[in-house]
Image 1: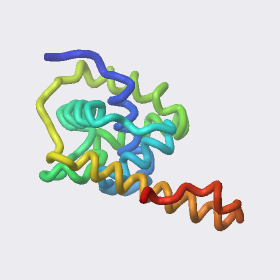
Image 2 (image 1 turned 90 degrees about the horizontal axis):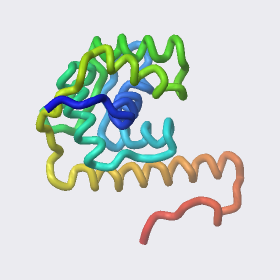
Image 3 (image 1 turned 90 degrees about the vertical axis):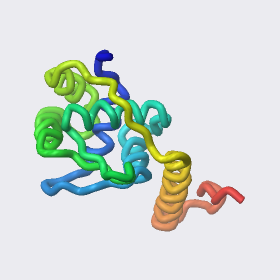
Length: 153
């Protein structure tokens, strides 16, 4: 079944391709979640993520490792990223990527899934990474300790 590209598809692509400079760099699922949070102040749900990965890999703008744990922009994805970053800048990703994805034609809703529990584990890793970054920032800015999130007990 074919549908229309969604905002979540563009968001997941931006999270995978957004921090890549000139060379292709693989990102783990937790790194993709961290990038998604940086550019949108939220994290995609597992169904949003899985659907976007299936669509983006099917059209060839991202690559996915066999175990589903690493993601990277392909040559076609880097071209889409170049057009986005050249004309719109990092934080105007939705304005540039939706038209770019539409030019690729309608997405195919192929089957793809993560191993059971992988998304939950990545969310835990993401939370830990975010907490550590907040703590480093607080130390640099000498914020009161009570403003820094603590790890869940």
